[in-house]
Amino acid sequence: MSPARLLPFSPLRIAHVMAGAPSGGAELFYERLCMAQHAAGHDIKAILRRDPAREARLAARDVRTEVLRFGGRLDLLTPPRLRRSLMRFEPQVVIAWMSRAARMLPEGSWPMAGRLGGYYDLTNYRRCSDLIGNTRGLARWMVEQGWPAENVHYLPNFASDLASVAPERPGCLAEGQKFILALGRLHRNKAFDVLIRAMKALPGVHLVIAGEGPEREALTALAGREGVSDRVHMPGWVQESGAWLKACELLVCPSRIEPLGNVVIEALSAARPVVASAIQGPEEVLSGTEDGLLVPVEDPEALAAGIGSVLDSPERAVTLAVNGRARFEREFSAPTVLARWDAFLHAMASRQTGAS
Image (tube, rainbow, N blue to C red; front, side, top):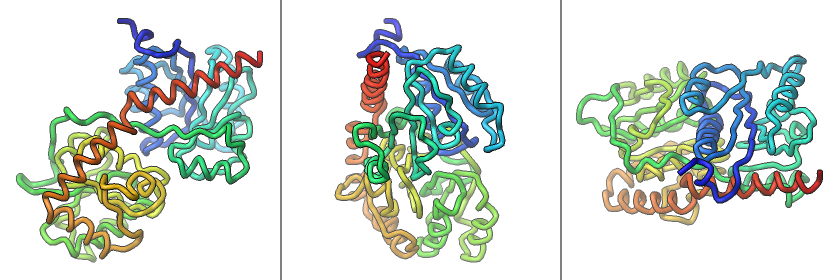
């Protein structure tokens, strides 16, 4: 069966434009969506800032890429080069990921949508006809900012299906050591400092924080002051976290600011219990459910109590894991989310065709 026949719609030419960082949730989903849409039969062009590792991953899945500088506001060369790239490709839809890419989008005959994963300055999206939010809360906020409701769309992220992934323990742990896992950039917004403080009340528990960023030195020093250095491990960024998720006791998302929380969805896919702060994205996903546990933000004692309540109750851990996996299949699996993207993209392309 040819890739195009896997689609419920005809294939489209789609340009995904992003000036992202080497790591991050939006960047990871950008790669996943480009790869998945290409595999489904769409003609995808990924226009991105130089990142050899990301380029290699996309190329390994046969996604065509083009690299542009995407510098600051004084970068006068990228906009005309982006225009030429799009004119050569003749996309039926252009998706701009985050503010810098949206700001540099040129006018053209192609319909353009901005995909936001956070509460960004919407003036950067003035050339876009539509906006995409990856949470319902973000979509509501866009409308509250004055964007027409009919041009705002909720399209959630999908995570890889980890059901068949084999568990694998991080090499930083000794044999037999059970561990809880946190994933994300080492940034103040992720509140890993709160999680490290919570570790004092969780004797014998090992924590692996897989990520990299500007807070590494401060977090290392904090673990020393709290007397938990021997149980807090920071092995750096891991590109594919599925094996570690399948091996951990639970996933912790202690963030201060978290518009979505891709890691929460990944943990649901892995059928691992989730303990998260009651903030933005995690609250939208987990509030009022038995799919995961929410605790107050900025509260190490409450976070420790929530983690302990799951670790001390195998029955509760199983309930959360089973419910979370069912939620993933129902709402955040790739087939479900890709179908929503297809419907949206074809509606945009048809709108432009009707206007021409």
